[in-house]
Image (cartoon, rainbow, N blue to C red; front, top):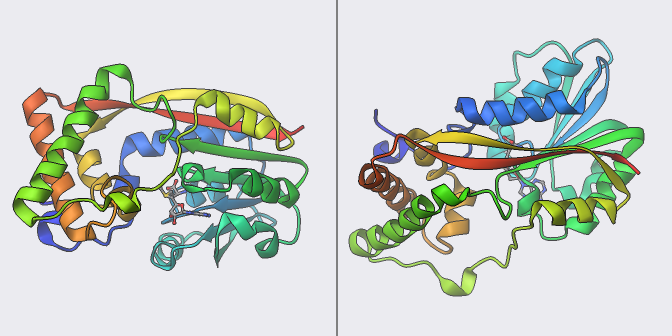
Length: 276
Ligand SMILES: C[S@@+](CC[C@H](N)C(=O)[O-])C[C@H]1O[C@@H](n2cnc3c(N)ncnc32)[C@H](O)[C@@H]1O
């Protein structure tokens, strides 16, 4: 199968990755754990291309339901809008913006806020949690999931991740004469499961449900994430997206072949919290 990186047409969004069944599974499970009801108003923060927005909209669908998809990236938001164009079960609104200014974007209290596969991207987590708390109604819930926390890579998969990155650096240097810009390495710190719980507790939330799901990611999943701008910028800072995508894709294929594996495990942390 030809990947979009091969064809030189990568849009660098999460679109292709988001179509994988394992991704659907971790998002669907979070929506189920949240126990939404028909007719609720829900915010999908960092909605990306709308994969979770659709799951939420299906869950609350009726004449009163409203889902507000908030996303800073204009390209992703455009795709989300297209992906939900035909959905008729609820009003879905799209707003361009970041979690840091949520209270300016949504003025009426909502029943639930989702922040899927994105909370790790936020620097000011305390501030964002306060924005979410203020946006939630009395019995509101906050749900998030992430596979970028300390513990996301199971010990048996560490060798894969190490080799993948080493090979990507080598391909980048040898084939493109490029290296990541060390001065642009993001200070983004990965939190542990416990640190997320503490963060929630100290910001007025009480954890209602917490699960870790281990999914098996096939090579196509790694090829797809290799084409995602935020992933490329995170692991190869300062490298042009096209070269970064090609190096990561090639390195993933080489590592799968070298280790003779068909899947690599990854852990997803899922959390649902109520107002304390
Ligand atoms: C990995 S994608 C996840 C998209 C979607 N929630 C999903 O689960 O498929 C992360 C998204 O978070 C968005 N994002 C990054 N920083 C953000 C911020 N400060 N506030 C809200 N969204 C943000 C990115 O633009 C990106 O679309």
